[in-house]
Length: 141
Length: 141
DNA sequence: TGCTTGGTGTAGCCATTGCTTTATTTCCCC
DNA sequence: GGGGAAATAAAGCAATGGCTACACCAAGCA
Ligand SMILES: [Mn+2]
Ligand SMILES: [Mn+2]
Ligand SMILES: [Mn+2]
Ligand SMILES: [Mn+2]
Image (cartoon, rainbow over all chains, first blue to last red; front, top):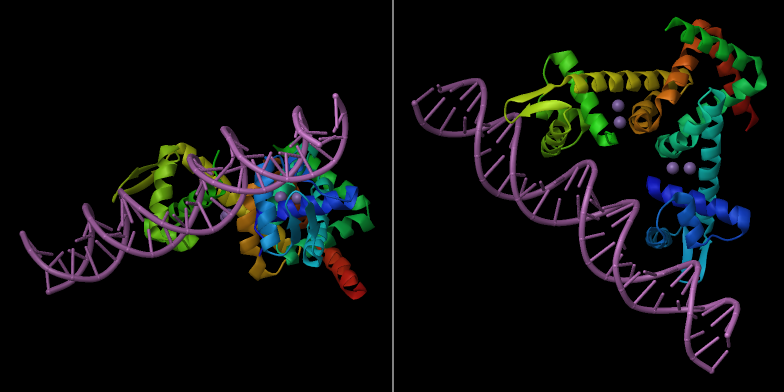
């Protein structure tokens, strides 16, 4: 089982490869705001756990296992950002909150949140009603 | 700022005092499923940070700061359990998920989730509609 | 062809938070 | 009041995941 930190790295690596075709240590470090030496250490662990194949100074390649997990993680992150946006969380809180909670939700919960989003997508007026509730509660206090 | 672990302890301590009038090391340990020695260590840290006053072998008392924080943490936990229940997460996943995510949500997000719950509470038929969406999606796959 | 240099890797340190082991204190029952 | 079980405390160890300092590699320029 992957730790939260391992998930963050895998997610970032998958995204880099998806967007630029490769993932360098320095890009990973920048994205995660850690030092390059921390990246090297984690890459070695991900190699040991067969998420990727690592050749020092040569770069890395995701294994099938790593690709599959990476995609899942990226999708999960995106879903949670959409969720917080939908219920009205301020833009500047969203990324940090998602970075934290994404590692702690069962796939059952993820599915239920997906359903909830679909619920609002199908009938956008429902979001207006949600905003009305919000205004009511704000008026109360 | 309190770490996730510190929050878990404070939450448990507040709840024990609320329910039984006092919080013993062994009760805290049982609730959090950690060893009593871990509890002692954490209590000493919480004392150092002025969340409580600790006298060894004599017990502990929450400071005003500790009480205020404790109540907030307990309420937050309850809110998140209600949220997951409402959107249809299985009972046996809820506690673990909440234990994980509760430490990683801004108060902005908490407020928005509160609003969402109020939205469903005001018009319970909305939950039925949510369940219909769920059935649709399940039928799809 | 070498030398420079930016990127990468290694080693060793630290903080956090749990554990086990061992010592001490308290409290209840005789 | 004393003995012993339960509770509590302290000390030392381990895993994780950061950091700094320093060493190493290799692509590209002189
Ligand atoms: Mn994350
Ligand atoms: Mn993420
Ligand atoms: Mn928790
Ligand atoms: Mn909790």
